[in-house]
Image (cartoon, rainbow, N blue to C red; front, side):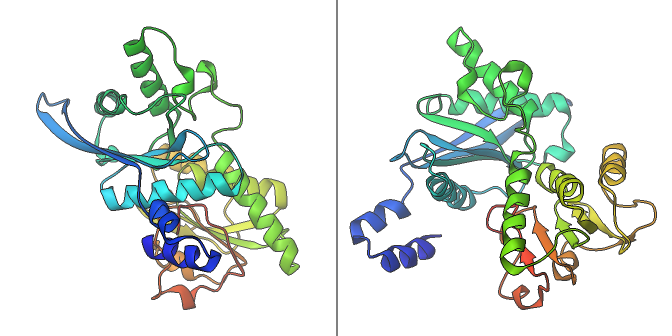
Length: 310
């Protein structure tokens, strides 16, 4: 990330001092906190909140739960948020947070206790006028509701502005769950216009079938008539060149916990899905999946970035 900022800064002719400011997060908070697990044992989790830049307004950025979370990743994601909020000209800065954990191996109660303790630990630096977290990988409205509730209980009054991405019932925004995917398919639409591609019937492959990937499947199929032929999640993937219907694949995922084993499909890996000969590729999982080793093998005419820096 620092190399990219250096290159961009020099290209723009920025003062060397300004470049150094943009390369350095303003504040980093690392917390280690105990959580009682269902077994009765105590486990210590490590979490981070990095605040990169607030020149344009309060810090803004998601919170992710993943085994591979580390401080360098969170720093990079926080700086990306600075660039994203500035690019779309909204009055926020950039931040990011995360906890090193595997929520897929935890109960709902364990995730709630971990979330509430993390919220309490970072409460000293977040708030409606300071830093407003949001969902990210493996977090959603449920976790945001717990964070809002924890902060509100500590304050003694409701603080809905402390978080975005919460359920509508407690002040969340209509359309928030699919907002990232909607922006993604709009970008694909504009790219298709630019190269003269008709999205109706265009073939699509999606890596990552969480919130962003699944909603992208729904929208690009429903609104543009595209044909999704392959999707993957953290457990594996499926391909059917005749097409995969969103409603059917999503119902299977909800029932089984994965897209794997969807009737009428063949298996495909997260690596191979990137190299399929399709019109549109949507990497919606984690960052750094397209590298110098596989970039030349990608055959899609359009790659829509649903993930952070895929």
